[in-house]
Figure 1: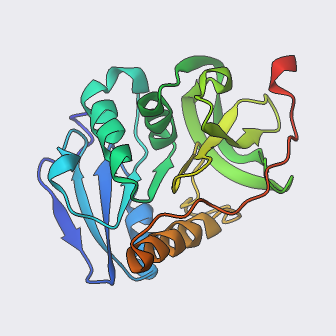
Figure 2: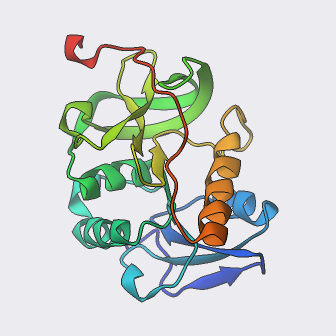
Length: 221
């Protein structure tokens, strides 16, 4: 992780909300997507003490390796969850958020890689084509009661995202910022920043108003 993360914070833009992005090897297009939506973006090292940061939203970026080894980051994210500020994880960020919440991860027999991985939204039943490159996954059966799967891979039924039932936290295993696509899930950046502004302006957090539908019986797989 130390080889792919920055050493000192870098600030981009001058928007109406401040997003802190934890750099675990984060792709530049994540930063671009946030800037295009009017945010100030502060990118910080992977082991940065988030308790010292004042922000409107927190993003845990993608990166390589076994997420369970990133103890400082997991602890920092766990503490950040006490703030109730909107949080969005991508790829490795999905796994780190699950570990911080009390879940566990495992190594896939075959990693999910490529630009055509189909993922099912567990609220709408819609299938999205996504870009992926990961060898570890969240174990759905270990998620605490207040967390649930957000997306599921239609090929191997592995976890593709998690979401909190009452707090503004969610994450995805795939890459909504994929360049050169697919762009099916770019709306997740709008969803995140809409929630960030809602929480900032109201001074209270409101859960995502999704209607949850069970599209896979995880006990079967």
